[in-house]
Amino acid sequence: MGSSSSLEEVQSSKSRRRSRSPRGESAPAKPKSTPEIEQAKLEALEKLRKLQSIEPKEARAKEWRALLRDWHPDKNPDKIEVAKEVFQFLQKGKTIINV
Image (cartoon, rainbow, N blue to C red; front, side, top):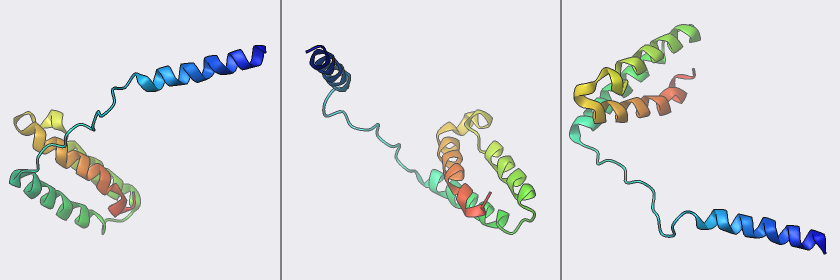
């Protein structure tokens, strides 16, 4: 009987954990894309494509990190939202340049 009671405790513990998040809660809304954000992403994509031709791989990685630094939100306090979106876009684009 001892094992069934510990099983019930585990199950009730799991159900308590599940019930902590309110039902119907949706993911945070994605910021609306603005023409400024889209233009900045296009420019960043062009730079990523140029990085594809850089050899060796270490030099390509160095240039990619420099591009990331240029778009870091902390470095662009006047346009934080644009910088954040482009920075995330560049992080996803890492696969394009095979770093």
